[in-house]
Structures are given as C-alpha cells and as structure tokens.
Length: 331
Image 1 (cartoon, one colour):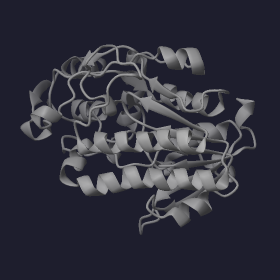
Image 2: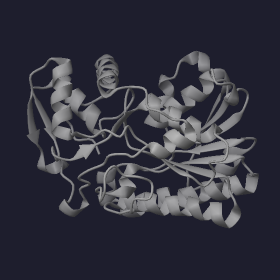
Image 3: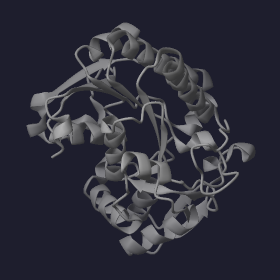
Image 4: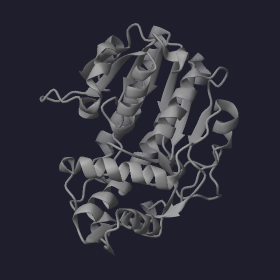
C-alpha cells in the first residue's frame, strides 16, 4: 500500500472506463476516498465500476453527469485534493462520423474540468492525453517534443485539450501534469481496441478480421499505465510536465495477432477487413514511445511484459466472453 493516497479524496472523471475503473480500484486499495464521475445514462449503469470488488465500495462515491455540465463537475470535485481527468470520447472511427460531438466532449469538457480545478484550488490535476496526438512517428522513438499531428478528429480534439491544459499552467499557474499513455491493454478493455478484438475472435472463430496489419504499436499493460497515473499524481516538482507512458517496444498488428493465436493455441486465418481500415492519410503507421522522461522524473518503469500481459488478458476475456460480441466490428 502507498501511504500517499491514504485518506485523500480524489475525483476521477471517466471512472467507468477501462483505465478509469482500474485507476479507481488502485486508489481505493491504497486507502483513498474516490468520487467517480461517470457519464449519465438512464439505466444507472456505472460502466466497468460494476466489476470492482464489493468490499471496496465503502470509500467510493459514484456521481453521474456529463463533462459539458460545469456545475455537475464542480459538485463532484467538492472536497477533492487531486483530480484525474480521463473522461473523453476515445473512439477514432466514431470521430470520423461525429467530429463535433468528439470535439465538444474532449475540448470543452477539458476546459470545464480546468475551470473547476482552478475555482476549487485543487493541489494537482492529472490530465490524460494519448499517443495518437503524435500521429505517425517522424522520428523514433517518440519523445514528448515530437510534433503533434491531428490525423483524426479524435487526435485533433486531444491536441486541443492538451494545449488548454498547457495554457492553464502558464496563464494561471494551475498545478497540472499530462500523461500520454501509448496503447494500453488488459482485462476489462472493450473490443473497440485491437487486442480484445483479436482475442475474442481467436477464442470464438476460425478467422480474425482486422484493419491494417502493418502498423506498429507500443502496447502497455494496464497496471503499468495506472501506476504511471499515480506517479504523476504524487511526484513533487513535475507540474507542467508531459510524460509518455509506453514500453519503448513496438510490434506489428499482424505479428501480435499471430502471437495471441499461438498463446491461445487455436489455429486461425487472419484477414484484412476493408471496413476496419482508416482513411489512408489518417492512418497512424508507427507508434513507439521514448519513456526516458517518465523514468527519470516520475520513477515510473513498466513491469509487465507483453506476453505476461497477453496471458492475463486472454484468461480474463475467456472468463468474460459473454461481455463481448466476437467478430462484430465495435467502434
């Protein structure tokens, strides 16, 4: 247990999501009181928070609302020392069809979070960026000074959000830290992401349908990403910083599909599905992280190897296959 978090009250936006729910769980395990801000729906569904162990519920307050509602955010953040802002619309294919909604949520939603943090005087805001803001690597590995390229409406919205965060640090001295996760994977992730897409199809079908097989990605296991968030929240003297959270290793999508099929021991055929391809100029061909800054300043070092992470993820998805629709294109 990390005593830094004990008895602190923390707001997490996007708390019902894949990374958000695992961050909430880690904070609770370490003794924090968590205000979990989730997107309202009429079913009262808290998202993936429903999968948390029931014994952690004592210090968890689930608050439904929307990032567009600054008043709701203000109420949720009352009494919170730190804020982790993970709330966003994150699907790249969805952003092609609904760019206005994605821009509104990711840009203006972040502005609302920033204004609330400033009004309430929080001690730190940890903002979630994404490796997608870099676009296709112009140099590799990608450090935090790499040019930002809006190759999709989603990545453009996140670039805008990152710049808003930067502006609040310079203009108002708001204590902010930005983390840029590379491709996080692990238990609870939806089939919108490529690794669960591969695993679910490999478990249930004889053919795996994917998009571009030749792109490369830097895959980071979710517990390592969560640890990076917590390091960004507790490390002194890193305000205004931007930190990549990636392993520094890359793998082709076609190769990781073959590796997963091998771990499952289920012969499959891999086929390109035209529907899953990004527009040609929008495709991010290569992502690989330079994580030296996070290692040096945050003391963050990824611990879980790709194969170990894949085995854990396969086991979890196998036990929860009823939560998925193998073969259906989820975006």
